[in-house]
Image (cartoon, rainbow, N blue to C red):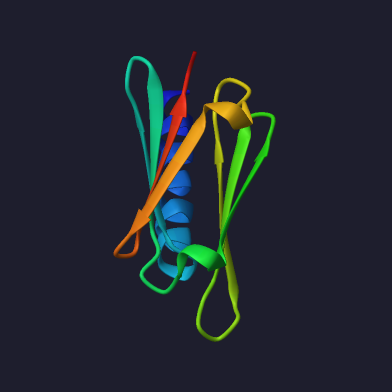
Length: 101
């Protein structure tokens, strides 16, 4: 059973690496009172970024200079509330803070 779990993690890691290369890189960090999501979007402008929250999912979409839409979705263990989200975009780095309480 442990081998199955290790294999699943290995396959999941490959998918994440693939999405990092074909869409854009996303990293998620957890602190005691909030989650921090960082998206590397060197091709985007603030106006081209869209955040969409549906229950436990945060979807980040951005349009590049050739009008291609790139999207990543992040799952959270709890439902996300719109009023607990703040974001900053500077020099191609999108930082999204999601308060837990």
